[in-house]
Length: 337
Image (cartoon, one colour):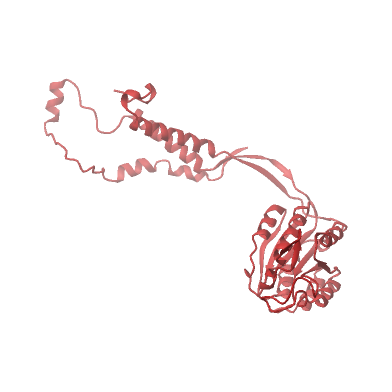
C-alpha cells in the first residue's frame, strides 16, 4: 500500500508564490532607465511590450522542481503486508559491568592480552546474535545502572550498543544491587516464566543504594532468574599488581554471585574463555520458550529517493540552461524567443 509518512508537507506548496507576493523585488544594484512614455512606444511599434513577469512556460520547470522536493519531503513509502514475528521465547536482559576495573588487561584471546570488557564484548556478541525468538535488552552499570536498550527482537542493534560501551561511562565503581533492581523493574511486566537476567561483573558491590542480596530476594519474588558471570583471571594469573592496585581475580566476590544465583534459581559461571560462556548459552537453550503476545511487523520500502533524484536532475538542467554557451546548448535547453 502506497502512502506518505508526512502528508502535511504539501501544505507548503504555495510558499514560493506567497514569498514572491509578500517580499519586495530584489535590487541587483544596476542602474535602470525609467520611461514614462511606454504607452506611446507600444502604439508606434504596433504591439505591447513583453511583461516583466516570466511566462507560465518559464515558471513550469521551477514549479516542477518544487513539487519534486515536496514529494521527497513527504516521505513516500510502500507499506508491505503484515508479517508475523516470533510469538514465543524468553525475555533476556544483559547487565554488563563497565566500571574502571573492567579495563584491566588480564584476559587472553588468541594468545594476546585483552581487557575484561573486550572479552565480554567478544563472548557476548555472538551470544546475542543467536538469541532467535528471544527479546534481548542491555543494562550498563558502574556507580549507577542505566538501561541502554529495552527488550527488543532487534538483536543486531543490542550487539552494536554493547560494542560501543565505554569504560567508566556509568562511573568507576560497581553497583550490582542497582543493576539487579533496574532489571527487575523492566522484567516484572513480562510473562513470569520467561524473565532472565545475565549479570556480568568482575568485582564486588562497592556502590549504589540497593543491597545486592536484597535485590536478589526482590528478583526471586518477581520470578526473575539471575545467571551471574564472573570475569577476571584466576588469582596468581594475568600478571602482577597493576594500575588499579589489586591482584587480578582477588576483587571478584564469587561468594556473593553464587548466593545471588541460588536465591533466584539460577547458576553462577566463571567466564575466562569462549567454551565457558557456551555453558550458560546451552543452559538457557534448555529453558522452555514461553508464549508471548502475538505481534506483527510490516516491511517499509522508502520511495523518497525517486522524486529527490528527479529534482536533482531537473536542477542540473536548469543550471545548465544558464551556464552553457548559447551555441553549444542542445535544442531542449535553448530559451524560446
